[in-house]
Image 1 (tube, rainbow, N blue to C red):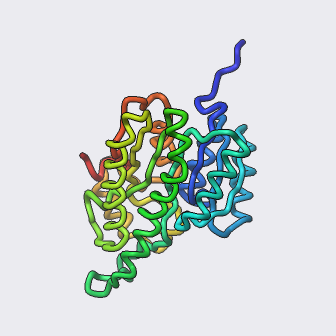
Image 2 (image 1 turned 45 degrees about the horizontal axis):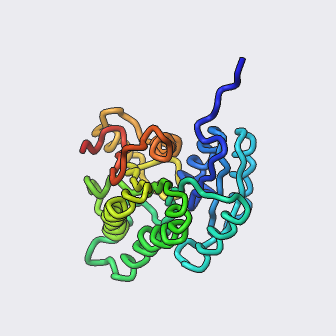
Length: 260
């Protein structure tokens, strides 16, 4: 019997912020489909090594690469090294963001939120994505193809709890992505977003009280909170040929809490 071909066999995928949480789940999902995954991380080398090992156990390959994606120089070096070693990049997943804690009781209200807090979230969401896109674009343009997937939040469409700085940065990322999709489409490059609801377990959601989760579950048609694996599937779809005629789109992954 002829073995089944996995969907990302021979593909090279860069996932930022991939040493934990959603990024880790995305990296491992690509590996299960045969991809070579660049596991980008900021500082936790041991966690990144563990993700690489799991990717390899799943039958793909992986390489841990440290880079602060808020730094243009660090990103340029990471992409150049990846291209030198692998010869190509087929898709990038911009998952990294500045640390944030979803704690409804201890969140900063607008009148307590400094402009610096907004800047911090913009750097983690928009500047980091800008840096990665600028670094991979010459390669994508040369190859005449490529897929960019940016992780946003359903809080942009339904701010059930007002996390001002985080949500504003994610809203800006949606606008950035749609402008990029418009300009890069004629070059054969697609840009889409995955908009996740509250995901657990992650470091960001560890302080979210059960009462808040229960409130969201009661309002969610699928009656549960999402997991990191729930986000991975839509990301793989947008990176695959199955979505080859989609760009500038936002796929909301939150069990139906937001319907657009």
